Length: 386
Image 1 (cartoon, rainbow, N blue to C red):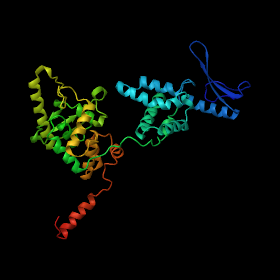
Image 2: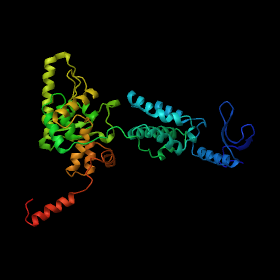
Image 3: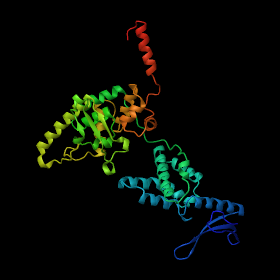
């Protein structure tokens, strides 16, 4: 059988010792004059012809990788070459999270990986891991193969065709506080000199925890410019992520401040100035809005502990996490009737679709603006009190 794609002659032969049919395609010669070949095998001659046809399709698409290039190698290349700007902690997390599935599919040549291989590996993982872990594992695998695809190691990303299965129950889903709980927390926060301003700002603006911890005073304007119609605001341009950048480009945003946040930040500035004056050179100054008692950046674990203690003091229970301030913000904005597109802008999401997926439990499920407007209109028409 002769190839029509210009890669040389296809050879098909029977190997008696192995009891299989083999086929090969000549790819020409390397710089040393050695002939390059790609081989396939199968139980029948027809199966080998089909595999050769697929091999030619790969070659026509520009795929030039070795037939022995495995999923393990693809992941290793992605971890080494495709993770610019990622922190060592993130790299280590992704390495560990991929380890269970690679135990099952890592040795498979990438060109031979099929959707059922990926689906089986994820299904096995789902028996002992949470849905979030399964989804993150799938995401990492998709990105690793996409990197291989960009390097002409494979023609299509089969992992992207697989929907990750739900994982084992476990891991408490994020929640949002009710308006009454949020009000109680705000009252308690006004009396807390450690995390009070942090909580008030997070709850009333919806900024991410990593954005709040990285907020600098030179990105805070508590006066605005009333003459020009510019309100007090914060510029959310940094986070504690690797490289100090925000999560996405759309996450860079300037947010107007409600008066409660302005008052809390004014008190925070006074407390910091007094602490600096008392400690002198012993206190570090990083220019951050929220710091430890020694002026150092806030530790995420300490923030979690302090927040749970503040929630207990507020009477809303101690099982809350700081990230749920953001969920509460989205919930309260949605409850007020704000459109999801506007909430997405405030939250710094790349699209309203992200808001709908990530915060689907917090968004008001029924659009009531029309009904509310009609009620008000007919109340006036009928002379009923509004």
